[in-house]
Image (cartoon, rainbow, N blue to C red; front, side, top):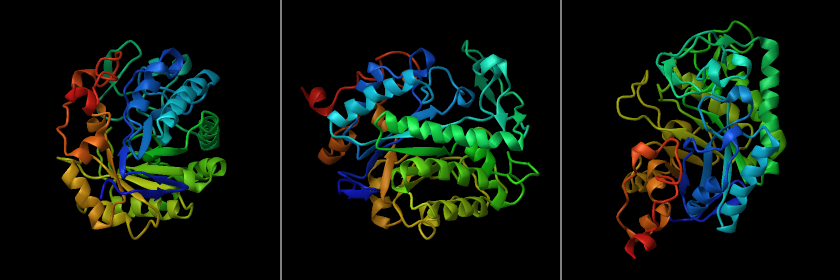
Length: 360
């Protein structure tokens, strides 16, 4: 079933394998994608859909070294190289729009400013500074109500820039403890204005950002990623079914290309139990992508269940650039070198051979 075509927005994709967004920290100075990045994505153009690594919408949105942006002319030009390379191989590629919120530090912010968040609550754990030191997460500055509209506009401009760069669509990163997720969950959002308190208020920021991006692209070329089970980046919610159910109902109004949800991983405990794609299926009419730790058999079963339309693979796409072909041929899968997942050069990035090359 993974090899069957599927309609996503205006596109008929050749298979149901999605290359998941993965931070690889290989952008050039200024967050500009390079020819190396273009080669990496083009090698994986056999995926039904590629979702790029998370890409900051503004200098304020950065949270890690060597991650790409979509807010300067140079970044747009760099991404054009990527989209042209993928399209030359017949692939489809969406850009993931990102603002990390509190998961940053002053060394990565302009003029040494504090990271921003819905509320002044520090995450437990550590972040990496611009000079590669690990330090405890800082207490962020709570955004003023009047500032939030400006961040929504940053998302709108990022969407416009992605259109200029030649992408086929965009995905909002509403997962993994970054800014949109921080507004959604009551463990990080303790505001008393119209963006906090009730579920309806906590969903407001996601709603406004989605509207801004849909205004640029139309709903059918916009996806959203949510992580209802994830505790990554010290995230929690007292009633995730109410929170993410409300988010799904709001997103349903936009007639989006897809909803991209991560399933519970080992050791992740969720109030009320894990939330799977079956929870979202009655709430969202369009395709659902499920992600997190799938192998081929699990992915086939997920699609067969009817709750999932496509399955996203992360690390398997790193070490198997032609993953759909390997699945089709029931061929062995190469192991990835975790030491080269983040940062560096071509090693562990573009030097994994295709099945044909490996056999030769």
